[in-house]
Length: 102
Image (cartoon, rainbow, N blue to C red):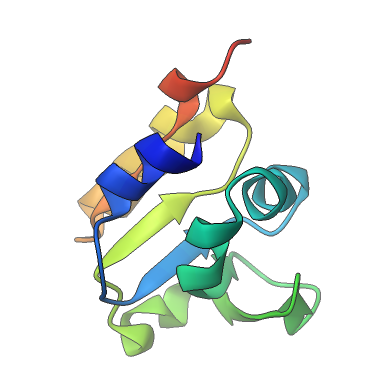
């Protein structure tokens, strides 16, 4: 997972994770080098300000972070939908649902 995601993420730039639940935790656990690059997580109506040692940013304020890419840290079955939203809003979405067995 980490090697393939590393190719998709690339080097440098601001990386944000959309999602702050179990699938974001899976990214942190199984792709720690990628998670290290994540500056913050983003969700709609966050219930907390910190998740997995990263600040949580309200999605409507994400533009203030000027992300170069947003990795989709949600259930693989929902990644297409979330990625479409991100792309529609002008962000580069990084999916990884094709890298895991369901």
